[in-house]
Length: 93
Image (cartoon, rainbow, N blue to C red; front, top):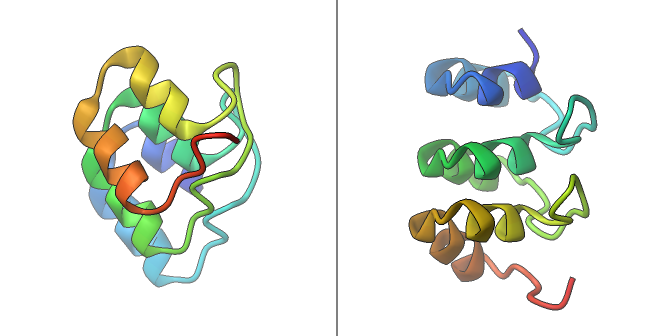
């Protein structure tokens, strides 16, 4: 299983295992292009935190909503929005 599929299916343990094995947390692929964007759009704050801890770029441009924080805002997951802001997301990106 790749990282994008693990986050899209909400498999926290698989995500952690892949991160522990050194997978590229910023790899592009899938409908939403990055794992962070896919996770934010799904509203899974726990996996968002794992990706941040793994070094993901919180300001990466991606998907229909352009950034992960905008996806989280669109679906109304305030906990994820706060987490991303606390990690230095660029509000002007």
